[in-house]
Image (cartoon, rainbow, N blue to C red; front, side, top):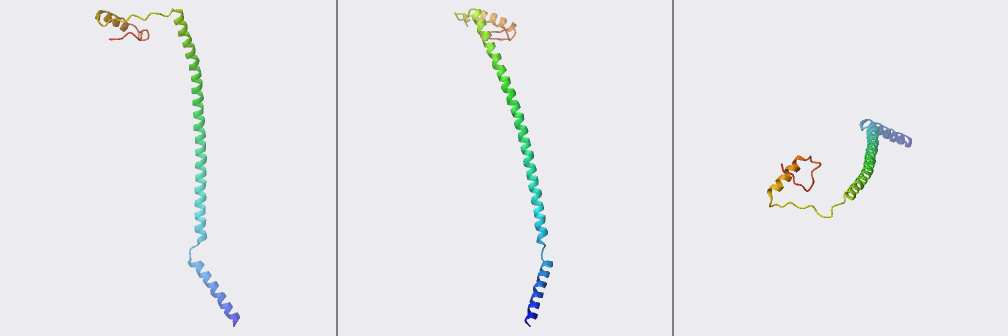
Length: 136
């Protein structure tokens, strides 16, 4: 009798497990589907990270090139400005820099200012003195 009870109990457990597995959801398929989605998302994130790193490297290289070109241009400009300053100093030294300031025009005399404004208006802009007012 005892063997019969053990056999019946075992049969009942087996039948319950079989029925439960047929009726219940299949968790392995759901887990497998979620794992595949996670792997796809991780792969997508890794690819995005590689693309971003490539873009940052390209941008950095481009900026580095621009900075180097700017530094080179600034070096050339410094050399040019230095030689220009030396040339201006040489011209000032050779022309015997004026020790007395230029006489200022009187505002009382309108004829003098009209003559100077006509004279400066006829000169090209590059040759006008910065102290001479230009009235057209």
